[in-house]
Image (cartoon, rainbow, N blue to C red):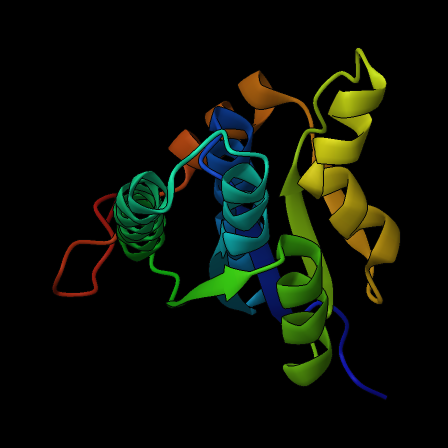
Length: 173
């Protein structure tokens, strides 16, 4: 029998909730001796829709895409730094495409045991419901999903974990 939760994927979307979810995923990976992957998907479908709706001109879409690509790199680097600080190895995965499709495909191709998402935002309108990528991912996931909601407890738990200096020995020894 396969041990559960040995391959964890955390989805980042640039929100504070996704950073908190990454803290929970790092904590989980440390405690379960699991592999962690952090994923950011540049939503090219949404960008194409903005051009199609004439909200963006093509050159604006390209400029905005470069900005999002930079954001993706910064968020992934931040999560990697937090993981290393706690002694957890973390693979970074940046993809482009339709968010739900890219996450679902990664889960299937890499035998992800659990997907960690930031708390789902409040839906105030039909538009919010249609635009909520985390909700779509959660509903279509083929593996268990952990939705992280309690920011204060997660922060406290994460901060209580010992930091691992570059040499590999714990601060707290």
